[in-house]
Image 1 (spheres, one colour):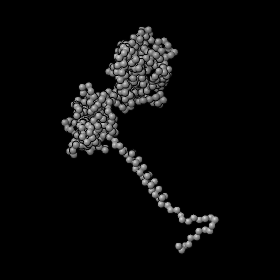
Image 2: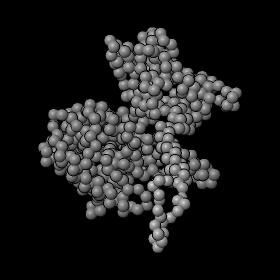
Image 3: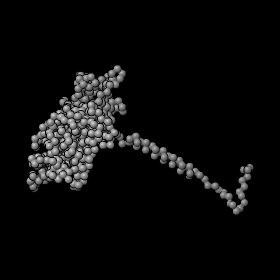
Image 4: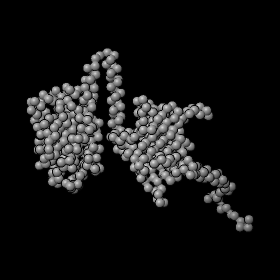
Length: 489
């Protein structure tokens, strides 16, 4: 890795040549700085690994190159990884608040600076494409073959790590936005204190570690956008460019929000002529086969959905009246070739005077055999809508039924959780308004109606009984003689 002098690129002790480099680098990336996030990597004290050459000035590190840097660091370095993942980060955060130009008293990264100076193996990547930095958790998880643990300093102090067992510890750090620069500075200072606490706890346990500090997305997109628009010229072209870039930023922000939500990932898209014509999403997708009176289950979710997952869609096609989405898999429940096929169609219905689309069938093709589930009776929606259902399965309140009693589908089970599909009338890369499978009268509504009806009946009976009460025809007068009621009457 690079020396600690290179690692201090953003911090206070920068040589003159590095200051010039930083200034030139900032100019070079002004146009695209809304796509770049710094990544800083270092190891704990007394841990030395072979140095890696940092990228040249102006070079933007992509997904594959970042994965290569991480792989080389983890192959020979500590496999206990501490990932400090900040919500937003840009190179300007270090130049403005890191004391990079001699104002050491204003620096907010003393713990980070001390860790880099103490480490004999550190690397600074000033410009990493933010989709690559956003996927750093997945890259580390694949290389360490372990799941991430989201921690805080208090939880870490109670955890006992083992140097021989890899661990991925993730610490989420906030970032201040808006015009209040002081609040952003205070938040970054607080983040540095958190990093200092974490490194102190790790050192107290005498466990060597590799630390990574990066952000999910850039923090200076707005400033970069204004400088970019200012360079495009004035008048009509400036307004047109501004609107175009604003739409791009909004789309990026939407995608980023989806990525940051736990358990949420982009849908499967099939494009034809660079236009999206089919989309599919599900929180869970499983298939099961009956063998020896026992159901064997296989989860297809990791191979279909998720960040960085690209399912094979060859065999898919779509037009204005029919769509066919084919998901290709390998080695599913002992079958080398396995396909999950969604057959959809749309046509005009005279009675409703509108077009509807139906999921005609869900087919399983495996080693030359086809199993077909019919879904047209239950899965349908207006042609311009998408269809969504909390649960779509062939065995539990089935919406998918085998085509016939002798069809191989009787030996299979298919189950979708939070299922949504659309095969027609797509606009861009988003689902249209969803037609939900749940009826208007849900179980809760029926229970409320029945309870209300019972209460009305009880109230009605009570009123009826009160109205049947008769007033006495004679009353006892305390000043007069008492009423005598003959016993013989």
